[in-house]
Each structure stands twice: as C-alpha cells, then as structure tokens.
Amino acid sequence: MQVTRALAAAAVLCLAAPVIGHGQQPVVEHAEEAIATWAGHNYQHVLDATLPLSVGDLPKTVEWMVCARVIPAFEPEFQLCLQKEYGGRVQGAYAAPRGASVGAQLRALRKSHLTATADELTGLIAIDRRTVNGPRPHLAKLAQDLEALTIPARLPNALVMDDTAYELELRSQYGSQLRVTLSGSAKTNQVIRWVDDAARLLGQRR
Image (cartoon, rainbow, N blue to C red):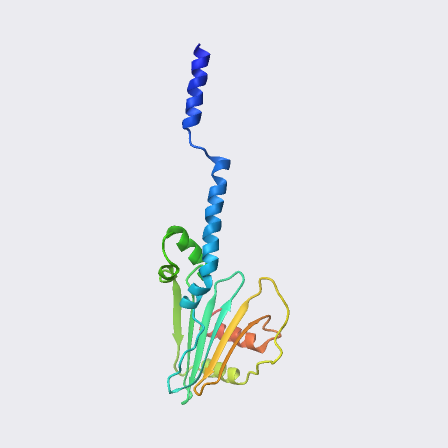
C-alpha cells in the first residue's frame, strides 16, 4: 500500500512539473525563425530610411553630388556622400551603424518590440554621422578622382556568394544622373577603388 501511494505521489509530481528540454526547443527555434524572417522582409525598407542612397534635388550652388552605400556580407553597412560646389568647395559626409549592423539591430529590436512596426523600429536604429568640409586637400583630391572616373559599359557578369555590394548614385545640376550597383574588388574596378578611398578618408576606416 505504501509503495502504491508513493508511486501515485510521484506521478502527480511528474504531471505538475513543467515540460522542459525537447518540448520547448522547437518553440524557441520557431520564434527566432519568425523574427529573422520578419527582419529580412523589412530590412531594405529600414536600410533605405537609415542610410538612404537617393541624392535628391541639388541646391543651385552645387555642381554635382554622389552618394555611395556599401553593404558588406559580414560587416556593418555604411554610406558616404560627396558634393562639389561651382566655386570649388567640396564637402563630404559619412554614416554607419553604431556597433552592430542595421540588420542585426533590426533583429534585436524586433525581439524586444514584437508589436512595433518597421517604421517605429527605424527610429531606434543607432547611426553615427559625421560631416567633413573646409579647405582640406584630400576632399579636393577625392572630387578630382571622381571626375576622372569612367564607368565601364560592360559590367561584371559573375555570381559571387557573400560578396560586398557597392551602390552608387551620381547627379549633376542639370539633370544628368547615374545609378549603378557593383560587386568585386578594388584591384580590378576603379569605381569600387574610389569608394574604398573615400570611406578611408571620410569615415576614417582602415
């Protein structure tokens, strides 16, 4: 009789105890997968809002303006802009996520704000911005190098997994506009080389 009562008590304890281990793992994995899927669907929208590529209309004093956005496979994204005025003055700007990439921040924010919209989370993405202007020789050199570039008519036609994407938009005062997306190496592509040089000077990157 005592053995039967002990077995019954043990059964009650087993039924009352929370189920852990194998039962919960799929639920956690499903939640993480849902967050990653949501972030993936909304990433481009948030990226365009935090690090926009569009140049927009130019002030009458500006001869041309270029903006580049770089999306590495395993490092944070960044954006840089350079403009040249008719008087020769050159100004630059640089922006990059503070700490983790835009994508990583978006996933973390979604996890802690499950009911927030993408637009609401956009305002919580941490971005560091800096401007560079004044009579600095390296700015003038960047402008000269850009004006000397020629965009090849034949673009690379190869698929490279986990490659860095270089997005570039250039606009002049009287309506000429160019927008191109490239990938590859600075050793073989002069446009990518210019963007890398500009990132080192404007963003103080290595």
